[in-house]
Length: 125
Image 1 (cartoon, one colour):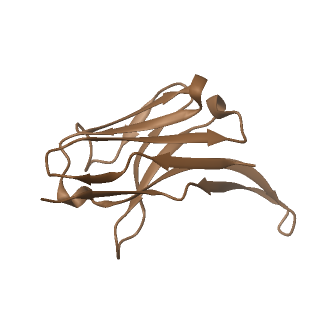
Image 2 (cartoon, one colour):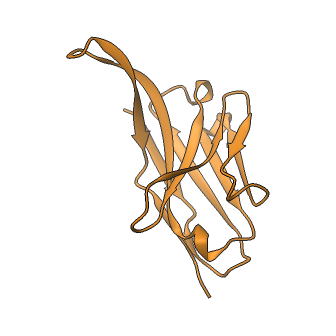
Image 3 (cartoon, helix red, strand yellow):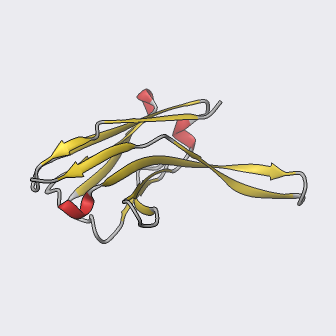
């Protein structure tokens, strides 16, 4: 039932801006911390930004001062405003949420991650 759909990626020149959107469904959006990750070819997926249900935001050091995460609970959408883009920002950007799930085999709860399919951001001249 959980679904995350990203949009807004594209090709942009260094120094340009893009605004990514992630629209969620299948859960009570306002109750959950939302996250943006990114993954460049040949590199591990990294956390870019997160925002709590109380609108507290955190950012990776590499994007502080340039990116802004926000959310609109009425629209079940989380945004990532990306300014002053650099070639190093080129990656597939993914929206993520974690729900607590029960593992019947191990008999424990664990954080189950849900992911969108991603949207490609290419920063190049």
